[in-house]
Image 1 (cartoon, helix red, strand yellow):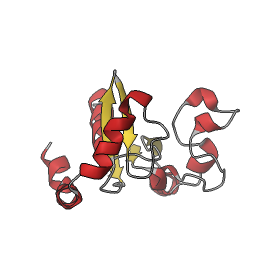
Image 2 (cartoon, one colour):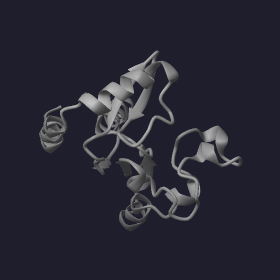
Image 3 (tube, helix red, strand yellow):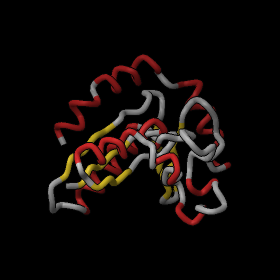
Image 4 (cartoon, one colour):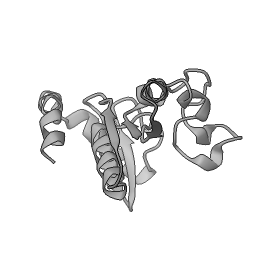
Length: 151
């Protein structure tokens, strides 16, 4: 059986045992990209759960993820892995995060900064922070379970 876990830094166990959230931040693992650092993933709740149920862990988690990214990548993984027994466990992110597609690349955007937003999106980001209807955004987050189950 495969245990597929997706979520943000909590599911990735960011900084649990290693100060790097992403593998790419560590010179020894930079080639792995934005996946969770292996040392942290090895002590994640997903790993502990996979050991308890004797399943193989597949992690789709990425620090700073939006719920849109979590849903998109979970659906992609399920579509690309249609066979076999699997258990999918989702750890939802915070409601203010968004995912923007720009020039074929998905960017995770939230109110805490623009570290990874391309320069040409920085003005859009500033307008997003100022103009977003936070009450409406929160109400969409509350309905997320129905959205995911209905798909």
